[in-house]
Length: 272
Image (cartoon, rainbow, N blue to C red; front, side):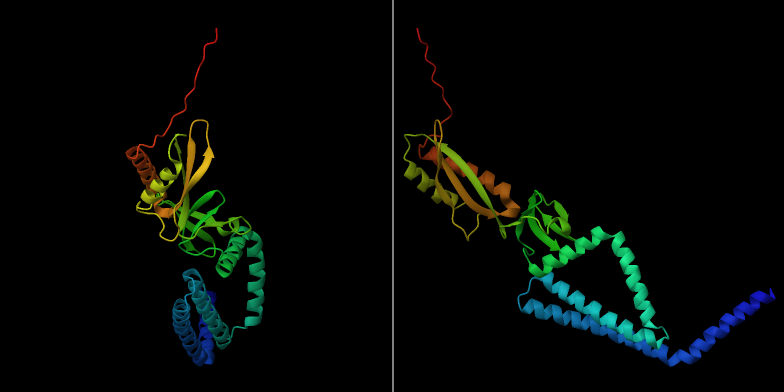
């Protein structure tokens, strides 16, 4: 019992001595940390506002703002620790050794962060673009250091680790996606008239891009029909909806103008 009392007394004396010797330093360290946190927050907001005003991409703006805040707070910690009697040199060495071990253990995660940093800096795509990569496609909703989030017409959220994007072939069609259609007309039809009718009526379908005109022309010559090819750009979020609407318009306008859509026929001759 006496030994425990002596240990408690010894700990109390150590704490008292530390508080007496470092009381003002503790207050100074606390003030430095408070100033660092507040300054980091304010500078982060300023950097974000300036980047937004200059038209910088939202993902890049958030990255610059976060990096500024972390840098300021980290500087405040480095300044405050010596005030508390903590030598930062061995502390930094320990962090370095710990970081090396952690880096070997989480190579995949670190590669995601490295790839994410590359995406944010080089900007092969931005939020709102439509991309195709690794067999999936959709509209970019969010780009973080670790992963990129896509969304498709069915509101599915597709999360792709960034290391699977960097080094791959990326198809970026901005906000739209190309829609390719084909319809066959009879060989005795007025092909020029059919193309004009299709081009005029497809332009009225809601959901087509206003920036790119509809392309209509002869795609190929089939066994029983002249195949008309149609290429148009549609909003990615409404891809299938617009596709079905365009097919409906094609069937209606060709039928209304007496342009036949032939079906395959086979002539069989019986030889004696």
